[in-house]
Length: 389
Ligand SMILES: Nc1nc2c(ncn2[C@@H]2O[C@H](COP(=O)(O)OP(=O)(O)OP(=O)(O)O)[C@@H](O)[C@H]2O)c(=O)[nH]1
Ligand SMILES: [Mg+2]
Image 1: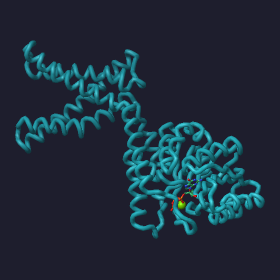
Image 2: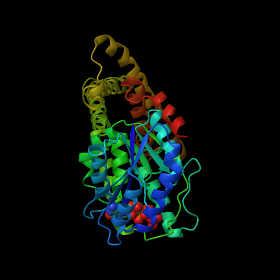
Image 3: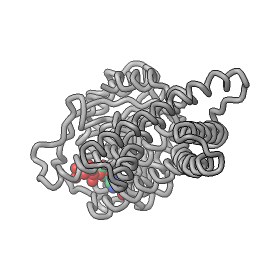
Image 4: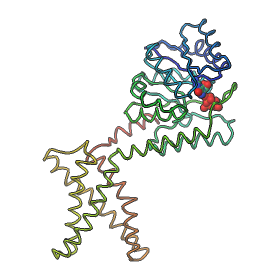
């Protein structure tokens, strides 16, 4: 198997010479089961980085140079990965900063994870003993830590700790699958969007902790303002569309209509059929449960729909049981609310909203996903979490 380490460079003349020497002399000789190559992706750096690389290419034959216009880090990576896979026949490509911030001694560990079957391995500064430089100013530290926390929370994937870093290894299949969607992200947002899309598509991700070292030569290319705005734009829109496309919104709409059915039929059963309140409430609740079951089955969870009559006979009572749980939650919260704050319309309605918004929705949505339509596989999630520490 062939692995190509891609080093994106913009004015990294001194650094690239030091890093390539370390890779060639200290790291590659220790790796036995991969053919190791280096590809420098330079955007015509005015400091002559490319000439420096050409000199090194005379000394070592496993180095290639890919030149292009400067359109940001993401664009350089897309261009270089394409080149590494098509022209150099890479099976695995690495992303690695050229400024010696990324610890090259970890490279064999990345490859080990690939051997274990992971598709994408990411270096992490935020878990398992990884770290950011102590000498970073407070604003840089906050930017990095908070940035990652924001990304993790908005994307709701807490088990990946370092979203913005650029020390990674991936199988060529990951790049080939996501490539067309990546060209829009030119700057650092590339890292977040690439990882996010890979996880979305079910590629297996592992993390390797490392100590990030501050660069000692050359200048940082980050433009913080642009970076933060781009990043927020990406994670918010990506999450929005994920929610719209996920069953959640359909489930919420179905539930809301179910509530209206419950409320209206309660009045009809009471006023027209003159049923006693207990029966009117029970029948109207059951109507709404039947509505929820059918519409969720064919719409919100349509991909996982239950069609065989036997299964429906089995699932419908389970669904009622889950709904009974919701009923108990509402009854308890409304009881507590009115017990503490008095039995007024205001307290009842607020209690109802709190019960539904904070308890019934998370409860019933998880129950549907886990037990009824089995969209979430809990054992798989916990295994994954275990692996990632
Ligand atoms: N080809 C190319 N490389 C880039 C571009 N922007 C940054 N890089 C390279 O990407 C790597 C990471 O960029 P840095 O500026 O070091 O970003 P950083 O590591 O987050 O920030 P520092 O800690 O300040 O170094 C370095 O090797 C840069 O030379 C670009 O537009 N084109
Ligand atoms: Mg750097």
